[in-house]
Length: 113
Length: 114
Image (cartoon, rainbow over all chains, first blue to last red; front, side):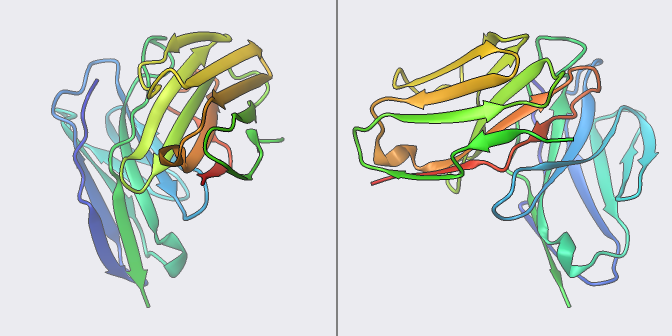
């Protein structure tokens, strides 16, 4: 299973762009890169997923370099409500049918006014 | 469209008692996961099922923990006997297994063992 490494915490201010980078040096060919968000007292929630290059949705963008050994979650113009823990996951829960999803320690993002 | 439903949401029990946590996955999802979250250990995968069959239970901490999935719409996680160190939030999650790593979590069951 590919291990992920991400910063334990980050601080930001409202309106700023936040970039959280995750390292996954031993990512496998079948692995996807997925990011989850968890608010206090709630279960994690899927944000975005990618395999290579760039993916964008209404919430965030995900940048994946060609070697796929890292990825960066970009949150544009954060607000106080974006304060949460962000998890980077690498794995293949579906197609491989033998995979399982392991959550790392996550990055605790604190957005200040 | 109902999400993953867990019960109970909160439970306080005495050490030595049996605890049963319940989960109803999203209809049509082939994968079901049980996670445990604590401040010290973070979010740990306990066990997961594919088509009602346990695939990997290597995360189950010890024999006091057991999980079953008798059908596609129901799963239980049982702790017997419970101990104070089992106090945690237990999350159930499900996945269609056809969209990479997209899994859907329930709201969690908050367990306190005193």
